[in-house]
Length: 181
Image (tube, rainbow, N blue to C red; front, side):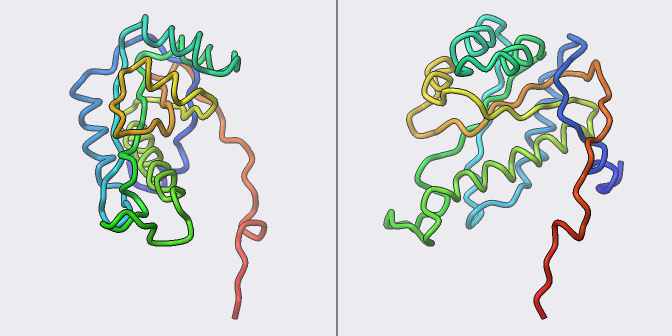
C-alpha cells in the first residue's frame, strides 16, 4: 500500500471480528511506529499491550469517566494498547528547564505523532484501530501498573475490522490552508 492510500484509507474502527492480533504483528506495528519523529529524537512513546479481558473490562467499567461509547469500543476490541510517554523528557533541556514556551505540551505532541504512526502501520497490516481520549489517566495507569516515570497519553483499541466505514466529509483545502506572501 502506498502512503497516500494508507492515509486516505485508514479509519477509526470501533467493531472487531474477535480474531486475535498476534504478538508478531503487534511488534511489527511498534517497530514501524518507532520511526515517528520526536523532540530531539527522545523517542518517548511507550506501548503497553493489554489482552487480558479482565483488565480491559476494568478499564471499560472504571476508567472512561462514564462515557459508555468508549466502554463499548473497549469491550469489543481484541487488544488494548495504552500509549504512554516518558515524563519530563520531551520539550526539556538536560537541566530540567523547558526548551520552549510550550512546556509539557511537547509530550502530547510527540505522543500524537507516535499514535498516528502506530495506527497507520496497523492499517498497512490490516489491523483496525481507534484512538480513545476520554479516560481517567491515573486509574488507567493503576489498572496496568504503569511505572511512575511514564504518563498515559491515549488508549488505542485494536483488532481485525468487522466494519469498513466510509470516510467522513473532509474540509476543503481552501478552509484548511492560508498563505502569506
